[in-house]
Every structure is written in structure tokens, then in C-alpha cells.
Image (cartoon, rainbow, N blue to C red; front, top):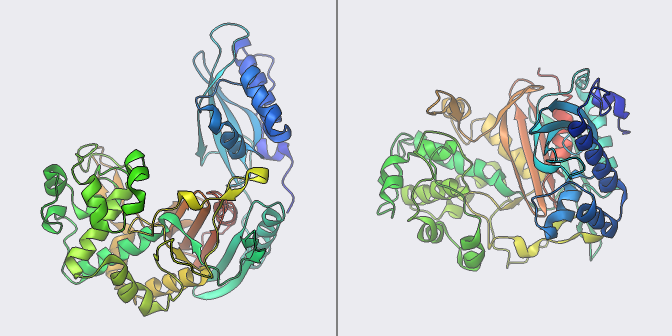
Length: 470
């Protein structure tokens, strides 16, 4: 499927404006030259440009090509805002089929290079841009198939896609290679690592135990994890805080993780490593994504059920719905259907094996097929995994933060184009995944990829931007 012309992508915004101040004009020239180099220069020429004439980047030199890969293919549209201390420009991101904003600090003196401050995706669109037309399901399926095929042909997507409605599979297909050295293709039975998508299983496990009266969402976690080292966490952070990322429990990744990665085999290993840390902020005051918080939820499942986390989800989630290809088996075990992870692009594409954790956890990192995730959705919507009222509580519930806003349980969200959905995304070097089941239309989108984050979302977001809400 061909991309729309730049004028259609950019609407009425432009990079050229005779009323620009000299400082703004200098930022625009620098940004335009930079994006020309991003999309056309070879690696050596690009690095020389950044060193001599490009914008000032905060990234260390060894990350400059990674940033180039991130922005490759973007369309630089025009000015969003301009002030003495910052100039913001619109960009179109073809991977996510959405817009982004990039922010520069103008040079202090004439001729000085501007500094890249930040960049972020946005749900906004530039003035004069029409949102994508809604497509009925037959046309949407054709568009999704074309999108996946185009990105696979340009080696930007390698994985599997499944689209269903109310349990009926409408489209499923695999693309690319599971093992590039052996030229082994991906199939619909390929097991892809799914990153944080595993948090869905942890959330369901917690709610199953809530349903049985064994867990109180408002109880402090010290009720279930006895002798937890930090008392502020044990007595002030509730189970609901962990499910909403409002507990201030922090992440697991960083120098400590890198040093100890080979020995982190169980939830208790993570608690031994991170359990003495104080909360990063007052529990319940705000929201900040916490992989460690979901590790703690996995530990709670173990303490309450008397089973190891993996045994619990196998017995009470995977087995009841027939998810026979999903698990958290260690990376040291050879699984013939598990895809090799690949990070980077072009000549710098390589295996991401050295970045993988020892095994999947309650925070994610396991593996599954698109078919198994479809069976998981079926188990939820047929109430085989949770009663209707319990599932609704997981969908609608949350924690009110200090500003009075509801921080929802981490089990879906709302997209302006397609309405409320349940699901989750996941990504890390060499893995990308997305599951979205839309409650109004009953449409399920599942994409898994053995490439970097953005590979799966490039398909799901393209589809959901065109999906009618009903």
C-alpha cells in the first residue's frame, strides 16, 4: 500500500514561512538537513554530518546510529510552535501510522547548531490533516494484509498477524524469518517472545484470587508477602497500586539487573535484589510504569496460591483455554518453534540474544503464538477465566491519584479512533507484540514480531486508526 503524498500527511503546516525569526529558520534548516541525512546518507557520512553540521544530540556517540534508525522514514512536516527557547516541529511516523513532535533549543548565537531536546508521539494531528477514513471489515482486512506485506517486503516486519471478530478468525498469516541463518520462515505456530504482554496473565491471576476471596485489592502487600524488607512498601503499597503502576516500586532494569541477570530465576530472587528500595514517590500519588510492581504481583500469586508463578498460570490460565504454546521456559532451553530475536536494521541487524533475561516473569518476557493469544481473548470474553463482574472490574477499575484522576488497572485502554479495548503491548530489543480486543466492535487484533519495538505496532495502529468503533 503506497504512502500518501507528503502534502496529505502534513496538512496546512509547512517548514517555510517568511515571517520566521532567524533563530527559528536556523532550526528548520538544521532539522531538514538532518532528516535528509537520516533518510539518504550511509552510516559513515551520517556520523560525519552529526559531528560537523548536525543538531547537538544528547545521545552518546555509540547511540547515534540507533537514533537514526528510530527516525528513518519519518516525514518532517512543519512548525507546531516557535519561541525563543524552543521550536517544536510536526513529524509523521510511518511505523506507528501517527504523528510525533520533535523539540529543539535554538542556537544561542547566529550560526550555532540547535540542540535536540526531546521527541514524543501524539494523538494530535497537524491543522488540515484528515484522520484516516474508517473501513468496514472486509476492506480493513485487505488493508491490513497489504500493510503487513509491504513492511515485510522492505524487511521492516517479521512475525505473524491474526484478526478476528467475536471469536471468528478473519485473517491470519505469518511473514519473514524465524531464524535468518537457517532461512527458517515464521509460521502461525512460531512462538514469539512478547515482552510486557505477559502482564495480562498476572492481572488475570490476581483477579482470579480476588474472585475467590483470597486477595483484597485494597490490602497492603505486606499482608501477602511476609517480611518484605522495606516497610514503607509493605505497609503503604496496596495490590491495586501495583496493578495501576501507582505504587512507586520502580523498574527492574539497570546496572543491578545487568550484573545479576544470570541469577534472577524467580520472583523471590527479584525481591532479594530490590526489596530494600524505598518507594520512588508516595504510593497512590501518581503513576509511573513499574515492571518490579508486576514481579511483586507474581510473588503475591505464589504466596496466596501455594504454587510457583509459572505453575499457577499454566494450571489456571493456559490449560483451561488450550494455550499449549505459551510459557516462560528459560532461554537456555531449546524450543524448536521459538523465533530468534533480531535487533537493529539493515547491515547492523543482529541477534538480540545477549539482551534477553534468563526466563519470562510475572512482568513479561515469555513466548506465545498469535493463536494462543486469540484463545486467551476467547477465555476472557466467554468468562471461563473470570466471571463477568470480575472482568468488568478489571476493565473499569483503578486508583484515584492525588490529582483526582483515575489511574486504570493495566489491562487495556481507549483509542480515540476505535473505543475501549482490553489487551496490552510489549517490546524489548528483538521483540514486539500487541493485542487489542475492542469491546464495542468485538474485533481482535494480535500481532507478534521477532524484531524491535514498533514492528508489531506498525500493523495494529494502522488497523485501529481505520476501525469503526462499532
